[in-house]
Length: 167
Image (tube, rainbow, N blue to C red; front, side, top):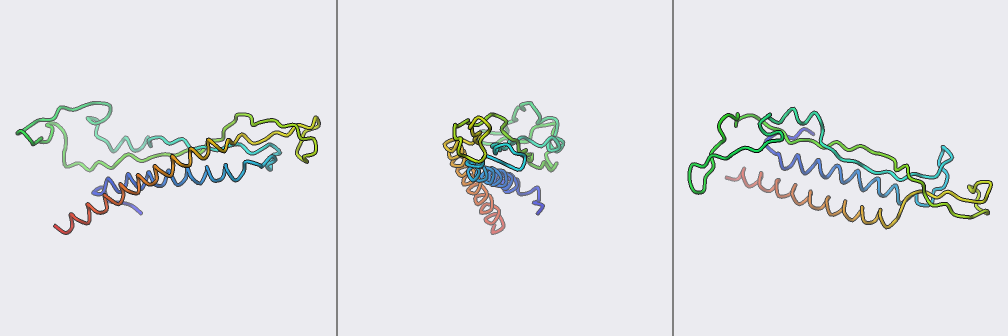
């Protein structure tokens, strides 16, 4: 659903909710595969993670004056700032989107001596997945808290829009 440029807060919060949902899904997948010693390719499961970055196409929507610079504010009075001269203040600026890319962690997992395990190599060693349950749980708590923060911001933006319509 396309959200109008009048609701920056809702758009930003929904992008954050989407990223944190993806992150929690990957963490759940990692936790579910902590004991998977053999995937279809014959190797143990490899931990997955998400890297979040700013969409490169989103920078085109931001005027050049706002990119990597600071602007002085012109004061008309003690408690009032007017628009900065030289900037088109009526121009719609959409919030910059987030780009999330999924990667595999290529580090080796633990090697355990278990000659009775069917996936053990010829020397009796079993290659385990590189998933650390403690790290995954900490990441899940952080993702949950970020999700809750974005949800609170989303609800606040929604309430402000609703209150503005009642004026």
